[in-house]
Amino acid sequence: MEEHWDSHAALAALAWQLEAGVTDAVCDDPVDRFAAAEEAAKAAEAAAPTGVQMPQKKAAPPPKIAEKDPVVEAQEAANACRDLVSLRSAIERFDLCHLKRGAKQLVFCDGHHSARVMILGEAPGRDEDREGRPFVGRAGQLLDRMLAAIGLDRQVDGADGCYITNVLPWRPPQNRDPNTQEIAMMMPFVQRHVQLAAPDVIVLMGNISCQAALGKRGITRLRGQFTQAFDRPALPMFHPAFLLRNPAAKREAWADLLTLRAHLNERAKS
Image 1 (tube, helix red, strand yellow):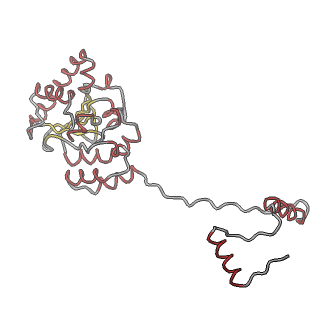
Image 2: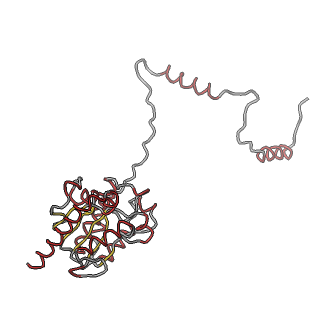
């Protein structure tokens, strides 16, 4: 015996099904919709002329997102700087170097920018990252003694002063060496730094500094011989951290310091 519903009962039943989450009406008998789709595809294939393949729709490729070239971005930012204050601000705003995310703070410089000697180190270590100044750990203390031995001091300006910075302003994880991409990314800022500080001579401390400024590695071969970097006289030297690990190399380092002192004396006469 069939059950007869009035319109109110039917609407109430429909509302109950909607509340239960029913979204599709189905037949009394189940339908295999996967099989139905396969049969429709076979029927379309059979209806097509022999030897003609049915065109298939290809998914549209995702739109290409233009990636920023970090070297170009760095060059544009560096070129816009007119003094060291604006250069520091530009580096602080530069977000394309992933090292920034893992460092505690920016390590920009130490000493007086009017000094005749500019020391270009490699990258900050743990102590430098904590204090925000380059060469403040054990290697920095040794550097200060080395400079004092030839009459230079980062705390004074002018002829006896020393201005210090690094190739990278942020500490690499676990104090690892910077890679070529990181060096290339930050080089526009380094070049602009040299232009704005305008030192008489640059000391390239270690292999990374030589790689960045000269495109060469092999500090044992390069050290102690004046060359040109950033259109200025440059002297490669052992990094103080290397000297702490290899005390026997301090003899060569002393010879390099005397070479630097002699060069500064000659420039002072001319």
